[in-house]
Length: 513
Image (tube, rainbow, N blue to C red; front, side, top):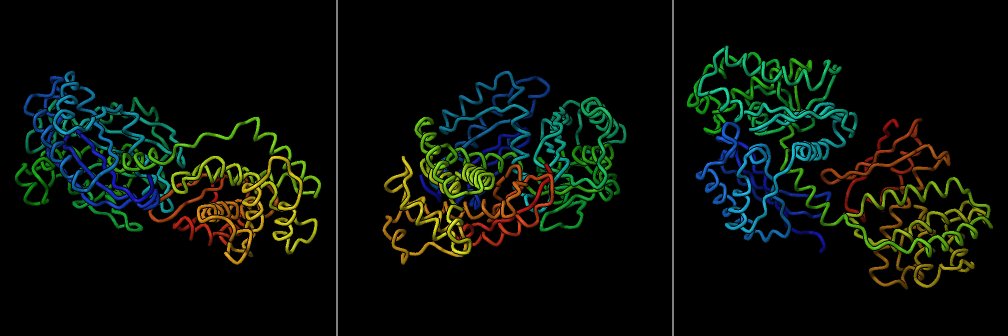
């Protein structure tokens, strides 16, 4: 299936069930088309009796039926529905799953806390990529608080705390105003568990912290910090000053003053205490609130799973023989083996990470690898025009296993690896390819140009690449132990074909390895 197509994600949380429908133009462009929120509190009784009552199950099944009707109107082609804390803990969750599937045809997946945290992290990193690198990600739901301590995109520590807003409301008997004693009970419930989970307090000076969940978004309107690169923030110092006002009002008062729904007004005081306590424990002054969570993480997974599966690989024995022939041929022309092998490795890494976009098979991957190994063989004739001489040598040389259209495509890539020569129908070998092969050559040439630029100094300074999409761009992180300013600048100069063919801006940055 090709882009674009419509996808959907459903998050059956402890406080509400949410649907988002989106149009996937590519993994770089996912546009929300419709959202729906139904205030079915799956956490009601689930945290005290460990059961979902009949009324709750019926309302949840009805909500999914409404979602199915909306998804059908938008002709959704792929969907994933997940349930979190309340459903995990309910002993009769199988009945919920059965009724929802019977009513709507949607299969509800009850996920663990680790998967829940992963989905939120995925959504946050995608939304902040190229802007911020969060060290703390906190997702407060109705049943739990998930806190991830990050280093780049790696998780240093992830903790699951059973201190969600609905859980605390029902177990502590919170109803309306929150007294100082109740607030202290909430703080104690959080800080005691947080201290055991984290041990000594992590160093968080100048930390970029992120808050997720509907309550975080509502509190960011009540105690707003400055918007940073278009992202809302929650000012924790202002939140502390406004705590008496939030806690001292009953549900109707919060609805009226803060303009929130009843189900939000019932729990927002608890959320305010949780975020205030978390901020104090970690030494935070503010938190970014990007407005993403489990649903957005699910959307990303749906797109990636739809298009990331690799094609059947080329036979290892056969491909090894061809590569041996290619390397033997290249050695005749005194090629720089270290540089060429490194460019091939970088090119293949980019190819693999960008599979969801280009959707090319492993034969194309193999052609890219061969072309990268041979891209500089023409330098033995003339450095300035080595791309043209290299094309000739590949086309006319004797390379066992490199024949027919495979040879023609490799020869074209050797010519086009240099940004001085663009694919053109006036170039007869390229013009002789069919339409699909010309498209494949353009995509592969775009990748090999970036890889060649990323080793322009022939130092093999970049140890690994990470490519991730965000918005309408691709961020390519170069992991290196030394400065790679020249490599990044060279890749950026060679990015025009990539940006045109992949329809995404290429952004490069170095990450210390």
